Amino acid sequence: MKRIIALIIVLFSIIIYSGSAQSFVKIAEIPINTTELEKTLQYVSTQLIFQSRQQTDFHYTYEINEILKPVIDTIKTKDKPRLVFVFENQLGQSVMANYSEIENLLTNLPAVLMYGKKVQKVGDSLLLGDGKDGNVDLTQLEEQFAQFGTKKRLHLQIKNISVDEKARILSDATVIFPKDLRTDRWISGVDKITIYKYSSDRVEKEVPNTGETEGVEQNNRQIKPEKPTKPERPDRPQRPQKK
Image (tube, rainbow, N blue to C red; front, side, top):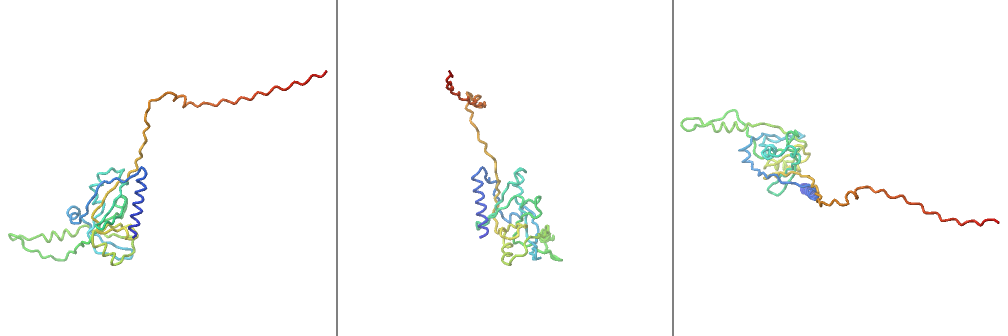
């Protein structure tokens, strides 16, 4: 319900902006597929730690700005603060974020994408099988080393969460806003990110040139009003002369 109210407020704001000389221009639409992300980006092994010391296991995580970097790098620096990001899932739910919430140069807790894949622990020993032609098969060893990645503990502003909420967050691709005091904006099952740019360019009105010059100088010249003349006094009747 709270997400619906928040979305209504956002849409109402967009309508207000659209009614003036302001608008949102769509820049790009990026599909989210965690399998493809693993092929192109290095994940960060992240553990969520809440204020009550409640914590999660280490899961695969990607910073949002790294996912969107190929698009953001093509945008002028002066226009980046005008960017708005809409995260959508398969259920048609969506949330919004601004540029300062995802850029790690502007915040120490940027938004991240976390999903249910856990980072496996490496044991003390590993049994390697024989490969072809008597060579040792190093495939398992390479897979284990790939699990090391970069470890990160993300300290959140939230005190704790319920078991059901924890399961929701870690079940599928979830966008997490570490600075939020509640999980209302943490959207799960994200499959698309759309980037918009807020535009507020003023449209100047052009005055047509009619070429008429006659009377312009006279109209622009300030004409002082004439001083009112005093009305003439009527002649006084003459007094009769004394005899």
